[in-house]
Structure formats: C-alpha cells, structure tokens
Image (cartoon, rainbow, N blue to C red; front, side, top):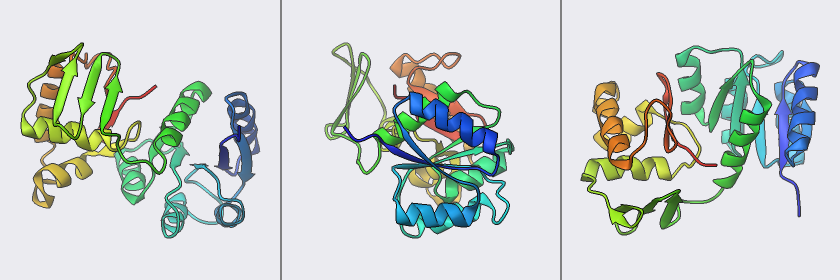
Amino acid sequence: MTLPRVLVVDDEPPIRKLLRIGLDAHGCAVTEADCGRAALARAAQEPPDLVILDLGLPDMDGHEVIAELRGWTQVPIIVLSVRDHEQEKIRALDAGANDYVVKPFSVNELAARVRAALRGRGEGAPAVIELGALQVDLAGNRVTRAGVALALTRKEFALLRVLARHPGRVVTQRQLLDELWGPGHSEDTHYLRIYISHLRQKLGDDPAAPRLIGTEPGVGYRLLVE
C-alpha cells in the first residue's frame, strides 16, 4: 500500500520535525520545504497528495503559494499558521485552501484533518452518504435517521448537499451564501445561522458538542467525518 505523500512547508525546523514525526506515525510519507519557492518546485517535481502550508514564509506570503498551486493543481491544502484572525482564515479558504489550523496545534487533530482532506480528494459527493445513524440520499433528496425519514425543507437539504460535497472541508459563510441565496446575500450571515440551527435540530446534532456539522467561528462550517 502506497503511503500518502504530504509536503510540509514551514520555515521553522522544529515545526517540520514535529510534523514529520507525528504524520509518519499516522501513516504519511513526509517531504519538506522551508520557503515558498522551494515548496512550488518540490510540488512540481514530486506531486504530493496533500500540502501543509505556513503563511509566514521568508520569501513569499503563503497566500501567494496557494494561488500559484491553484493555477495548476487541486491538491488539498491545509494552512497551519499563527495568524488567527477570521479574515486571514477566510482569505486563505476563499483562495483555495481546504482547511485552516491555528498554531499551537494538536498533531492528532491535524492528522484527523489530513485524513478527511485525503478522503475527499478528487471525489464528488457519493450518491448516498452515511453519517452514523443518518443516511443522506443526495440523488433522491431524502434523509433518514435509523430508517425514519426526516422532513427537511428544500433550502435545508440544499445546505446539507453543499457541505456534503466537501466532506471534512471548511466551507466559508460567503461560499454558502453565494451558492444558496446568490451573490447579493454574501453578507447575510444571520440567514445562514438560522438554517444551520434548523438543520442541526432536525438531524439531532447538538451544537454544544457537534458530531455532524462543525463550526469554524466567523469563518464557516464543515461536515464532520471520521
């Protein structure tokens, strides 16, 4: 079995060492780059299955690296950065990053996000998604829990469908609003909060300890996958 190749891009040797050891223990083959240009060259020469990217690189900003990569590859990108402002997260995700993790971080949590990103790579949403006792039939517009059909409105199901197309990935508020209500509603986050609340209630998901729909405060939402 071929191990997934993860390219770690960070200018701090201790961080690269920590990630190399931690991800190796979780079954990944890790390569490293200490700057943006080296990362782009390595990604072109030895295409990785996933990139973990710091934003504060010595030669170029991480957002530039995302833009360059997205010019020719859809490889999953997880940003790992000390920048914890909402706008930084939104900017990176809107630019094409799949996920955003703030330093300091848990290696185990990061490894889980790596697995989620790799699981969805190059795949559309399956026709039927299993989430524990929940079964989401995307083709049939039907959701059941333990075999009992749940009554979702058209908009609630559309919201679930968008999240399901990106399992484990943060979908920004702007992306959700643009797709469900149109570009003219990109600032109407209160609509989204209401529908997320309704959807969680119908799915039996506890917002205090979500198992199905996770929240990235001020940024967006993700369909949680193991």
